[in-house]
Image (cartoon, rainbow, N blue to C red):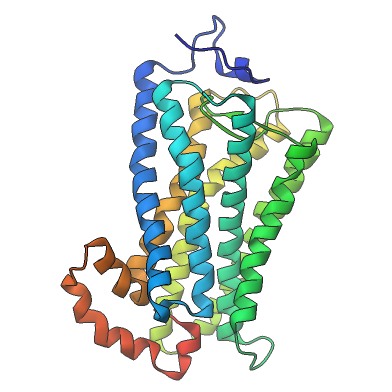
Length: 328
């Protein structure tokens, strides 16, 4: 039996006869799918963090943003991912109103921080390679400032629902929470539009502008530099593939509140967004030779395998004068 959930829009997730939006098998399937993404996301992002703490060679200013993204993605996986697995296994959201607000805030905070970090990585690479401000070296204070800004920006725009501007509510099939895209109250709509513009559209435009300038510069540089282009462009594409459906659905609901969307259809973009937490560490490990050199042996419990064959090539990559870019 579907337990009663004391949340304002819980009835949105029940049918005309108060039946749940999915069968028991449907909820279990969603739980398994989320577990398939959440487990590797926790392991891989934790690996990026641990090997960075273990090896001084990885603690370069330009790698701070990569580690920051791993922290944000790990937070998303530990809050949104794990709770989605549990709630779907139960077939309902079991944490009550306070739990919904806490989960919605935490997942949004980590998610927007991750998106801001993608923009931060793009800007850092563009400044280091293209040098729009001349020969200004990228150092620790720049890296730390960028990381702090990503968290501050996310915090600024995810706190308002806790104080009455916007709110966190159930989404999808009713087993997770996020900013309320469905509420038609003008104050809530103004928050959602501001949130979309400043937490998605602006970072997205920064990413596009930075990488456009970066790739134009790459066309005139050594072939080695294409390693950076391949890694960061792939990071952006996978992130947008994960988050664009979610942002598009949210805007659709805001602009056309009467549109009928089956809860399961509304759940797919949510799960795509949460699945992004597993893509970034894979990109770090398999496209970044510095991280791969230490992360793969860590994951394989000390076995070097094919990583040893790349050590000399890795050293060659990070030693030239272009090492400030830290391309691989």
